[in-house]
Image 1 (spheres, rainbow, N blue to C red):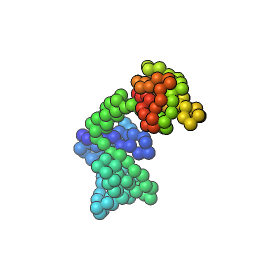
Image 2 (image 1 turned 90 degrees about the vertical axis):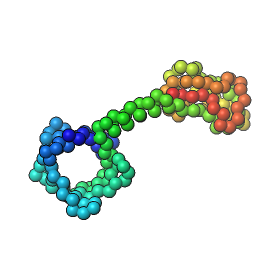
Image 3 (image 1 turned 120 degrees about the vertical axis):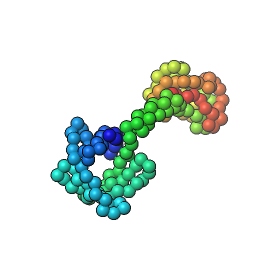
Length: 166
């Protein structure tokens, strides 16, 4: 038995391919058969319904399907590959840090948050004075202030890292 996870239009669906020419999808066991017509064309029979299908591999996991005149792209992974992908995404989220950099030379007038405080995407976090104007710098993502590298009154150059959000 082979278990797969297919993503179509952002929605994940799991199914099992049984050795007996049957598939289990949404707790229903269905008979299927697949007839290869050419390199990219197939006839797929599920139950009593036949689908004319043309496929193309877009990558090792992503496929394009034209089924009865309707085109859609899917990602197909084994259940194990999907679980590994989810764990990798969680790990990436835990180690991901957004940086807030100075967009221009200037002086830090005000830092509105402290290390450890929660911040929402778009929320004002630093006021930078440049060319006699106050510039509000906003958080590029929601998270927690991880580190602050400057103090109020510091002069900064363009692209100076001011703080990190995780």
